[in-house]
Length: 239
Ligand SMILES: N[C@@H](CCC(=O)N[C@@H](CS)C(=O)NCC(=O)O)C(=O)O
Image (tube, rainbow, N blue to C red; front, side, top):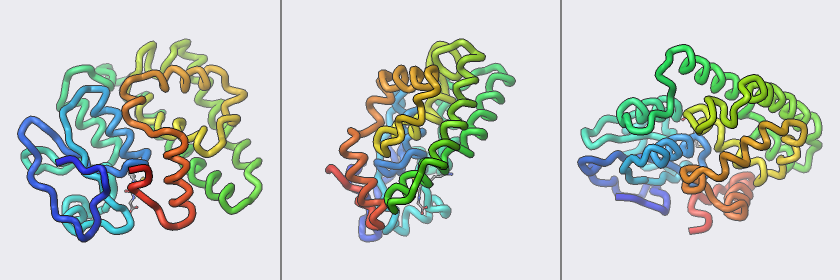
C-alpha cells in the first residue's frame, strides 16, 4: 500500500508490508524523511510510502512510533525503525548493494561527526523562514548561516573532492542535502555566494537521480511552506 494523500486519525491502518518490500511512513515535505527516501531511491530498494498527516496522526501510527515522527520504517516482519539517521544507516547495512557509508571505521566516524556539526546548522532553516514570515530582519541570522557554510566549504576545499565523502555521492551528502534543497524555496540562496565549492556541490547534487526523485518543484514547496508558516500545514499540497 502506498498513499500519496496523508493518513489522518480517521484513516484505516494500512495492511502488512509485502514480502521483499519495506515501508516508510513519511511526510512529503519533511527534510528528515527525505533523507531516508534518498537512501531508498539511491539504493533502489523496493518500498512503499505511507504519508502521515502530522497534525492529525493516526493512533495506529503512534503505536508504531511513540515519538510520532517521520521517517519511520516498517519491515515485512513487522519490525519498526525510526529516526532519519538510524533508518538510513539501517537501510545501508541491510541492503548491501551500492554502499553509501564508507567501510573504513575512521571515514565512517568522520561522516557521522560532520552530520553532528550539521545538526547545529539545521535550526537556521526554520529560524530564517519563520523570521521572514514575520517580516523581521534576517540579516544577522543569514550572516551566521553563511559562517557555518564557510566551515562546510573548507571541508570540500581540504578534501579537493566534488562531494563530502569523495568524488561520488555517499551518505553524508544525502544526510545534508534536503536542507540545501530548500535554500531556493526560502530565498536564501545568496547565503552560498561566498562559498563557491559548496555552491558547486549543490549544483552537482541537484543532478543526482535519487535527488531528482525525492523532491518537489520550488512552487510546490513554497505552497506547502506558506500553509505551514500560516499555521495550517497542508500536507497534501499539490496533490
Ligand atoms: N530527529 C528526527 C526528526 C524528525 C522530524 O522532526 N520529523 C518531523 C517532520 S519534518 C515530524 O515528524 N514531526 C511531527 C511532530 O513533531 O509531531 C529524525 O531525524 O528523524
